Length: 51
Image (cartoon, rainbow, N blue to C red):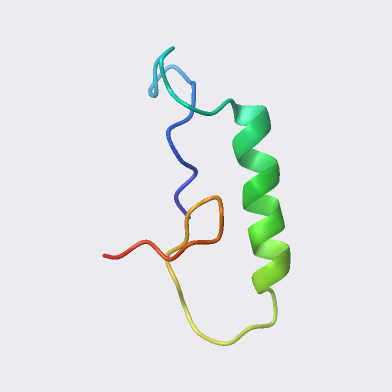
């Protein structure tokens, strides 16, 4: 999963999201997608990330 551009030591102070914004969204996506077949690379909003 792609957590988005998160304000961390790696993401830097100008990143768009805080950890408190990103993580709950990731959990929501995991819950929404549970028990669904297939593999997808998703972002923190549940959108498919092309790869």
